[in-house]
Amino acid sequence: MGESFWPARNVAEYIYCPRLFYYMQVEGIQLPSQDTEKGLAVHRRVDQPSTGPAAGAAEEEDPGRPAVLRSLVLSSRHLQLTATLDLTEIDGKYAVPIEYRKGRPKRFFAKPPQTEEEEDDFNRAAQAPQPWPIDRVQVGLQALLLEEAGYTVVKAVLYYSSEKLKLTIPVDDALKAEALEALQQAKDCAAGERPLPLVNDPRCPRCSLQPLCLPDEINYQRTPKPGDELTPRKIWPPRDDGIHVVAQQEGVKIGIRGMELRVTDRTGAVVRTIPLANIESLSLLGPVQLTTQALHALANMNIPIAYLSAAGRLLAIIDPLDSVSAAIRRAQVRQFDCAEKCLELTRALITAKIANQRTLLLRNHKGLPENVADELAKEAKSAAAAASIESIRGHEGQAAALYFKHFSGMFKGKVAEEFDNNGRQRRPPPDPINACLSFAYTMLTHECTAALRTARLEPAIGGFHVSKPGRPAFALDLMEPFRPLIADSIAVTCFNKGELTEGHFMRTVSGCAFTDAGRRSFFNALGRRMDTEITHPLFEYRLSYRRMIILHARMIAAWLAEEIPSLAFLTTR
Image (cartoon, rainbow, N blue to C red; front, side, top):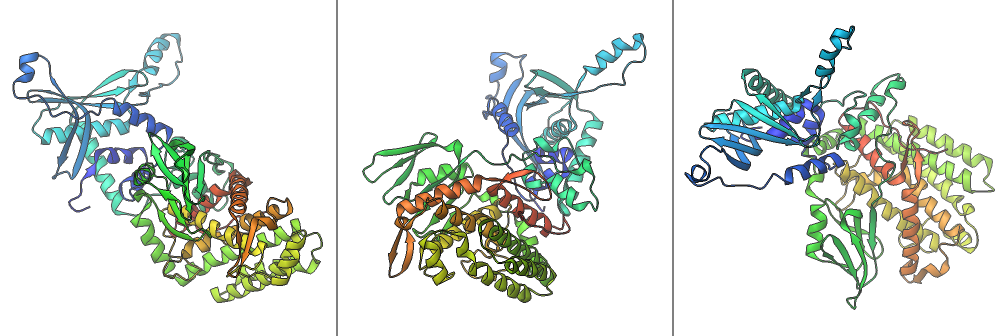
């Protein structure tokens, strides 16, 4: 790490979980959870920095009372270590570090008593509070820093706020040796590859990084014949309860007041307020204004902001800086320089895409010729066995031609006839179905771009689609299996249920496009589809489509890091 300093908190996390330490220290990834928010609340009550008393002031007020410093920052060039101490009592040359913890101490449960005489001793031992190893290491490192600063440290104090309990720990050679050993082990860990996840460990469900780490999913795929004990636990909630805000009305301005976004129309009237805590993302289509103050507030809360043209083309994403991981992106570039790795990714993507196209036709086309499903199954099988990416492109093209030839058979009315005459045309879309598909693919690209950024991957560097300036090649890769499941399915549902009609589109010399009312209807349908829960065929738990895309992005990241041997994408029956 050169001359960089290691935060004592991160080093202590190594004792809890080496993989968690690696994410935090090396990749710079930290995600909030209920536990971490409670911990921050506990520390906010004590983390009021102080500069210490003036010389002799403490003695004048109470000569026998130690001075108390809050948020004391100490660093050691020798140890390459830094720490912020919650509280520090200073009494002359003696110092006592006091660390606040939100939880409870460790309880030691001895062997159950065998006789009545042993019962009293057992009850006392069972209730004896002990510091957790992670807490011992943290105060041990703080003691080392205080000693380097010239103080004598004979004890440290841990305060567990859940029980309002203070534990005093003697700072002896054993504690300091334990802390130094943890520091060296953490440095060795950071110099190597990312550690593998813990196996079926009770610590994982409460870990804030569990949705990124995916311990059960990775271990399940790493095991040749996993048993029931490795079946992934349903730890991740099936969908988020936040709001994905889309603003598209011309003249709308989005500002902030307190902890709420305020949406005003062109006259300045407030049309809606949205609590920041409820927002997952913000998308701005066309001439919609966002104030700098609102942008800063959203960025501070790690809420991504997407700017799109009125037609839905993604122009820019303002993404929090913590979504960048140099280690993951280096692995991505190295792996996609390997032709065999790109081929493996492409096989999995296109095989799943063709299988999902076949399923959608079988579900919704009432008069589908028997040979069509057989031909699509044949193309999927050929793509899975293809020896080159160009060969897979050929099978994908054959499947797409057959799929869109019969695509109109899933629709009712005149829109089906018009699409049947035009076929699939992208630029410009000549009819409502083509316009809906193009817009849906654009929004799906945006969803996949956001998912890749959540997984700390670079959307511009793909394995199947060719990387070009301004083109999110990897997002286009990821969306392939989801095109039929999300975009095509939305089009079929909306037109057949009357949510989209001819009146929701306008026709000009530049093609067919949504009206404002049409876009609103589309976004309502998109929101419902992205929140629809689907069962993962391998892990057998349910996730919304939005979280399923994120899960696949993170599994790709694990595959690129060689934590899992192969890839498989979502297919439905």
